[in-house]
Length: 125
Image (cartoon, rainbow, N blue to C red):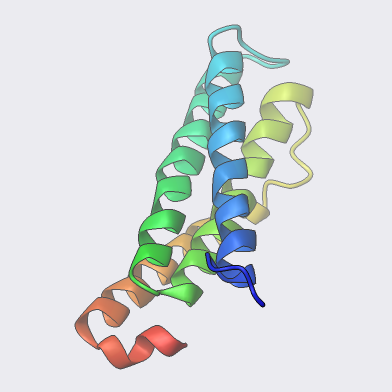
């Protein structure tokens, strides 16, 4: 007999949201001490803020059955924050191209969530 509770999808997506929350706290704590380059604290703070906001957005989307926005929030937060963290901690700009892709992914998540809330039939997507 199956155990009641969240679906496998909700558990995995929720885990990604929780991981973003954890990484956000770590980044914000590290921002208080700076990084490898000048301005690293600002990069870490920006990455931490984006991750924390979207960690919460993952759970908000899951709570209304908006699966695709939840995935877009989890993916977009990672793509946006990772290059900021790498640059702040190592000085490398090799991944800088991922930040705008992450930003567009986050925008798509918010637009899809609006559509889901205005058109409940989209929830199954």
